[in-house]
Length: 111
View 1 (cartoon, rainbow, N blue to C red):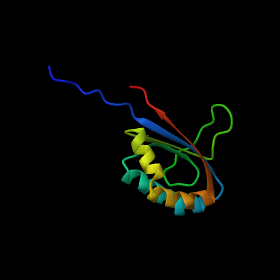
View 2: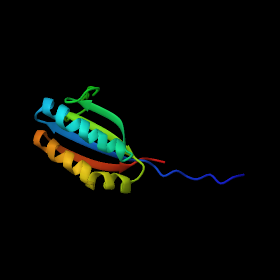
View 3: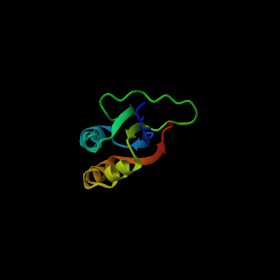
View 4: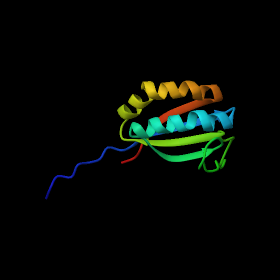
């Protein structure tokens, strides 16, 4: 029998976003940010709430949901950090911070 490599679990980035100007956020920030994520190897699992084409509704189960939420999947925490700290995303984030506040956290998925 051959060796079977065990895949590392994905790392998920959850971002809760309080959007103050949905139109500007959706036009000026979201496309730029999403392009940097794709270019760096990240992918969206979910996009919900205001300020973006294709965003699905956010349904509150308990408490008040954020105005917008995204969940991204990354191959590693190192890849996630490289994207987040990179010049391309940091330049886009300066635009995004004019129109929203962000709360982010990463969690490793189960094997």
